[in-house]
Amino acid sequence: MNANSIIFSPADRMNLTQKHLKRRRDNKGDGIPLYLKGVDYQKGSPDAKFIPAMRGDMTSIIARPSNGKTGVMVRWMRERAKFLMQNKLTNRVCVYVTTETAIENLSTFLIIAEARENERINKTSTEFAMGDITDAEWAEFEQINADSILLPIWMIGHSLDREAKRPDLTPDVLIEAFDGIQKWNNDKTEIDVCFFDYLQRFPTIQGMDVRGSYSKYVDTFKNIAIQFNTHSVVGIQARREVEDKKWPIPSLRDGAETSNIEQSSQNVFSLVRPRMYYEIGDTFGDKNPVMIEKDHLLLSCLKQTNGEANWYKWLKFQPEYNRLDVLEERSAIPCFRKDLE
Image (tube, rainbow, N blue to C red; front, top):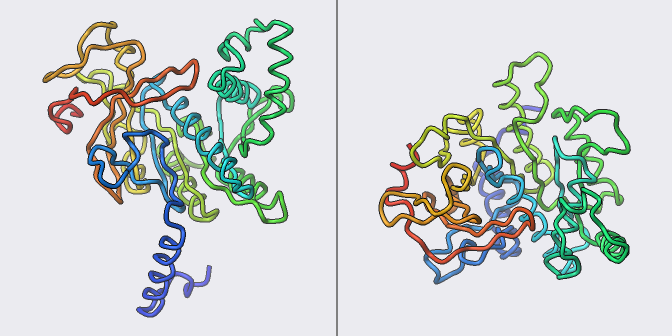
């Protein structure tokens, strides 16, 4: 590396700042929202606080297993891909990196969620995976699957058909894969947003311990955002100790390699599904408690570099259909920071 490439004179700094803000001004509205009304920032709406995610930045989502990490990321990808398609941004794509789920199974889940949303099929992806498909449903699925080629979604992972074992998605392999996607169409493809599901499932790097490997992957995800001018979204499994809290809401320090996650991420969210820890009908929170229902999901904003943090939203989450909606405003947490302890 040439040392001059990391030195910025006052003139360099001034010109780069001007160029950066002009690009933001010329591309106003180019950020990536969560596609959740009541969460995404709207001028004049004090309760809608999420500033759209920007290229070159990273968002981390912390949760215990079965608390919605994958569902929220897949839903975010689906909504963004539909936005790109509907607005004819044909050179932009979404990329989903999976270390656990086979591409066929993830794609089935994605396609059935879209089909149910458009009322074309009335079954879950689980029923399809079990082979519970009539001839009429199969014919409809074949057409839906063919139509899905228009969704600008690329996947990186393993196939039940191609691989005898899961590939090691090391930092070098990931960079090579993203470079291949970008160059697929004569360098005309732009990686709009990418999702990594999830940190702890990536393989330990040779010569490093687990902690060092986690830190290296976090750096890699952030470097991908910068190098490919995209936005990285990373799933983080929260520590088991979260479940010992009175209210099991992950905090910033509850993710693996916490310091690097906090420092590298512009946005950090945590998720908790109360039904995973309490009975339906129990209450959640000390003051003005919420009565737990099957579909409740609490989204907490732990960090937001370009906007307000330490806020939360109650969502209605139906993982079997990959549906996510904001519930009416509720006051479940009387003192946000205290309840995270």
